[in-house]
Length: 434
Ligand SMILES: CC(C)(COP(=O)(O)OP(=O)(O)OC[C@H]1O[C@@H](n2cnc3c(N)ncnc32)[C@H](O)[C@@H]1OP(=O)(O)O)[C@@H](O)C(=O)NCCC(=O)NCCS
Image (cartoon, rainbow, N blue to C red):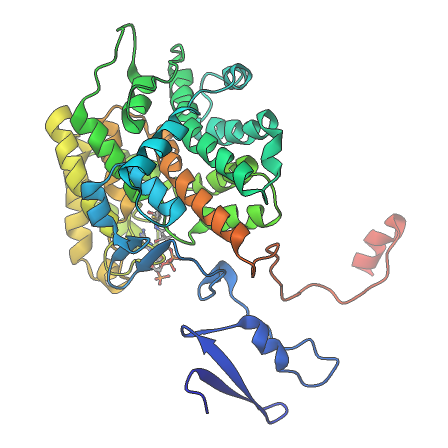
């Protein structure tokens, strides 16, 4: 018998099946061969929340959650964070290889050409209430780009795809900065194409009346590193949404908006905002033990802790903690840091968290760092969405080029009523009480 097969005996029929394994994985469709008779649909798998289901084959990002490993296209994220710019990493994720000097120059020029928003899109943004949540504005505006670039719907044309990828990577910082300024009531700042990706974003956020905004290089580098760390994370919730919406051949603007909507949830990209709210609620270091006891009694979660995949440590958290230190050297310490360090210290020793393998995740320190840089918590998820747009696009492109992929459409186990006859309105109450 082939060693890479799984031998299954169906006790209902005593039939035996050899099902091939590929990289330790069973093809769910092979289970459909297991039937009790010709009328039988065949065996399905049931996997709510995809706890044990590979939905695709992907060559982009590798994670070993038990060992705390994260690699983009084979390169450890630590090495990329140390040596690359975000746009270099974006190229790597989308093209599979690091760019040569010429390729990088062309890539940056291509993205820089697409940083401006159409004036009507700017007006669209102006229509939001003064206190609109930046993530709501971000999601809606990215979706609205689909009306500006109707040709984007030709998703099977690689050239059309390439152009939309440049547009999206170029425009998401501009949209993000506009949402920030809108909340503050400040006039919008147009992109400055002489600046790097992170510098231009900072210029659009913080330039006031000065003719040329002076970017602090330490802060710009810290932001670029955070962008690298957030660029992709294989089949997470929002990426799965990107692939699912994209599988219906929706255009990349609405698919990205849908992915961003998933990201906005507090269990996903919204967590860093929640971390800050939690630190606000704790208020002082001495209240940390009581807060932890409360979490252990089932009242809420320790936000910024735990991960579906990382059960050892989140390698991104370690780099962010380091980058946060660099930022604090410029901005001064965020007073929340003391509470965060104390929470981390106690939680890492506490049996409850140790047993459940709950470690600080990417969101635990990013929020404190963002706050020190002057962002309000409402902006945090938008800051996550900018780099993750690259990951979404890389995964979307891979999905469209994968001959095995079709429109994503899961099965269900139906648990509702058997067929029953319609009850006219006047007899319904009687049916219930009869
Ligand atoms: C990320 C997260 C959604 C992963 O969830 P998951 O893989 O489904 O893990 P589970 O919810 O099954 O958690 C397993 C156990 O740990 C507990 N747990 C998980 N995260 C916890 C947290 N942050 N604080 C306290 N307890 C937590 C659960 O209550 C559960 O306990 P139980 O076995 O006694 O029921 C979850 O850890 C979480 O909500 N964390 C806080 C939000 C956050 O920081 N998200 C950002 C992710 S990058």
